[in-house]
Image 1 (tube, helix red, strand yellow):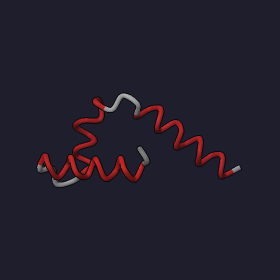
Image 2: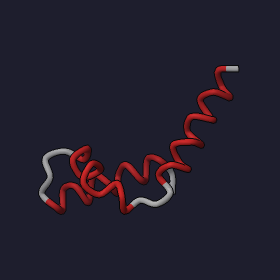
Image 3: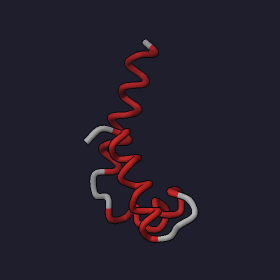
Image 4: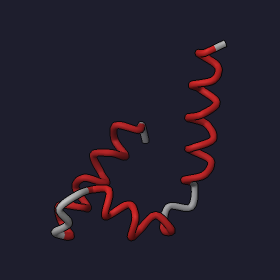
Length: 52
């Protein structure tokens, strides 16, 4: 799933749960996203690769 797709899915879940902000949903449910650290590492690696 692309980052855009993840953002869309998070926004949809946030709306479904009645949260006013997707950030709230992420703060509450981030522990249910087991690959979040790997995705963050890949994102940082990609930014650093472009910078060099």
